[in-house]
Image (cartoon, rainbow, N blue to C red; front, side):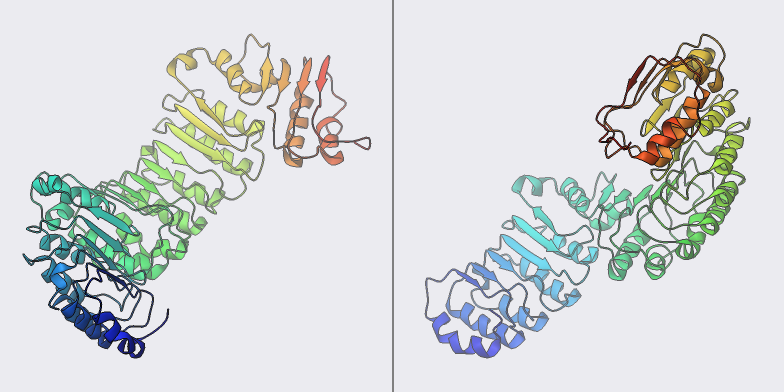
Length: 521
């Protein structure tokens, strides 16, 4: 109701007169510390059980008056979130109240959406609950993990070590701690810290995470994927450099989808180079360009990374070349580079050269772009580079004619490459009668049927690619392009059937149904 202390003074006699009053909410007003003193006078005369003071202007002084009032011990629910910016003094006041033997409090709501709720504050509150037998629920606003609710039962009190470890998961921290209920022990033994997608990180929260990291001793996996807004230079310094050097064996780091670029990457380069045990790095979904790729190549020169995800950045041939020619690129087992700058023959040639090296360890490759059609000739080059490759087991292609496809390669398939290459072409919707020869050109020459799926998202780029494929066919009898999403327009039909013609195959069946074209087309 947006009233303040002056208005509260007016109704004070009214509030004091209700001996049976057990629930009072004045949340969302403008009550300051003087107003809190007046409410403490009410608590001196009335045994209120539920008191909501959320979203006012109360700090330690006012909170102290309320918690030291005569009947505060009868409070079972106390909501005091989003008041003046909370600090250690306010948390100490609450912790002292919780540790009293006379308290009846069952529900506490605390914290602020305007600032980060510190792990050390949570630690103090938990320590005050060690001998508390009444508290059953604690709601924390503004934690690193967003608003969290913590339920405390007698069963959980019996196994406080396990329960404290479970509580830390509320903050995104997974540990391997087997004994000791102190949060310090839990953070020391944390093996994984993972925060949710769409995390609203700010400088305050980044500093808090930096402080948590500085206490870790066994951390192996850190995930900060998907912040809303750019994870800027100052925030990255707070995360990784302000409290360092850190002393834990980090193996996996995920900084994907944080909208940072080369400048920010430069900032944390010393941090990345310092982790000798790091074997998985994801910086997908950022704004890293070729210069940034050169910096990542420097990391690869010093660290043997196995899994590298660069999807959805701004890297082209120059940057890709730096990464693939780095000193430890041969140790890469997984490389994801889809949806970077529009891919072309130069980038495919670079990847093909890398795959054909005898020293490569690559098992998984993800390549292509949703913005353009992945050409059959590019697929051809990649397959040719795999002829003598013995490590690759999976290739994911984004943006193919047939949509995203996954290709699995086993030793058994390598023994019969002719059949396997024919099977692969089915991934592109092409069925052939080829009995020998593992070259894609032979397969397309002998293709008898080309059928694309319903709801195909054809565009002019894909139509040109299909036209090129048709120009290489010699035995095609059946062609199905049924059910494109959107109109198969005049220019697209020309690209399909006239641009590369006249065609030289004995076509018997043509299906162009459900493509929304008319008489003009």
